Image (tube, rainbow, N blue to C red; front, side, top):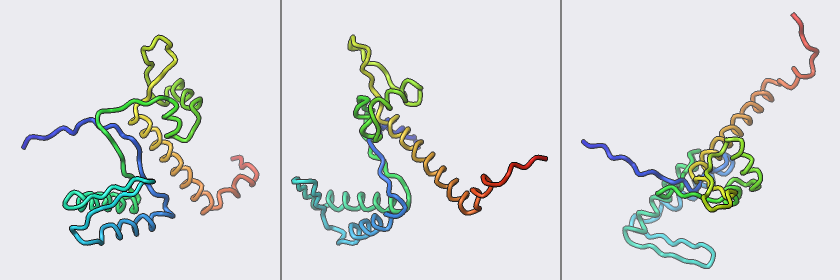
Length: 169
């Protein structure tokens, strides 16, 4: 059997649910998946209404329900396109919830890969969406590890060690 190579995906965003909200996401998945097997799907976004019926609607309803179920169990869903898209540092800053200046500083430090446009000005840079998502995932992993360290410190009352006199052997 020949193996297929998956096309390169550009990650647009990741979706996850904080621990305290996973029950709500799981309930939404259950409601979405519990309808009749041939039920369609209606998407409402602002003033826009899209109705999908038949096999396409039922398939999309099942797909979204499965994604919500995975998110409710602590998994991260990834929204992606192909081929890889590049975005401005301003758009990257919006996606990361930080200032454009901070994104530029991350680029200068080599933390976030980018490349300069050949527009003559030399000051315009582009960042791959997949690099933005990878950075966000690293940052979220670090925050999770820090929260776990804080939990362990509180559980074992390690703050009390800071207040005790230094021991010399």
